[in-house]
Image 1 (cartoon, rainbow, N blue to C red):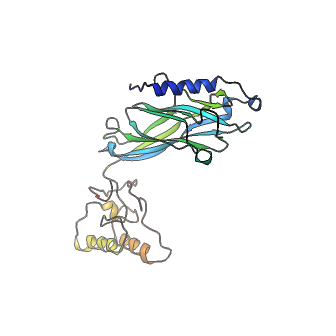
Image 2 (tube, rainbow, N blue to C red):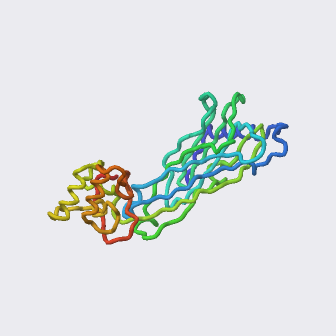
Image 3 (cartoon, helix red, strand yellow):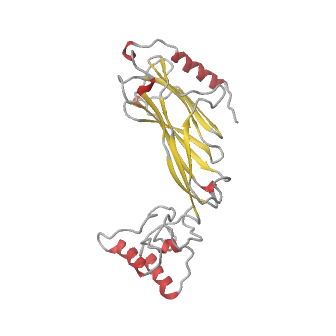
Length: 290
């Protein structure tokens, strides 16, 4: 386990505790932590089973007051855990907006193999607060997948991002500081599904692998069919995702360009992705996608 122990962390912990043990204001009487939800968003992630470390995803930690009198928050702290055998956090971005763009007085974020933490005090003197009457993004987290259990697997892996009180030294707890009082919110985990694919990602219909769907792509499909032109990614030629490459695929590409109202190639298009249809076609190489 990796620890980040600093004077800055101690100052932040002291400030949060100072706010936490303040006097409960009258307008918060009867309010409870269950009025608030701290949530980690989930993700569905496609990756190449041969190279999981080239893939990752982003998630958002948010706060929402779902019941009770709308309250003014002075700060918060949170910890989000992950399975370190499947992924590691690689980046953090504070997403919380402040009134009139005021600068947050204290914002401490830390990354560990098994999770991330954040502690925020908006203003040392209580000069401004925020509300969570709508679901409000607090922190963005980037993750990278790891080799190991994900390499070579043929079935999807289910895991979760859990709000935990065990990360850091001292451990950072999930708490909202409102009106000088501590509120332990309801904690909502984010479900993550990691789906393996053979071969590289590709763009369906982009036969020339230049990131643009144009006349040349339709012509290249015809060249493959009638002049035995080479192709390293048959899934890209299968524009209609029928499981075979035929003249219909050339027509699908050309009509999407020149016939009003005609549909584009099937997914993945126009962004890079994987062919999720079980068929006999494959994709050995597609240099147009990372």
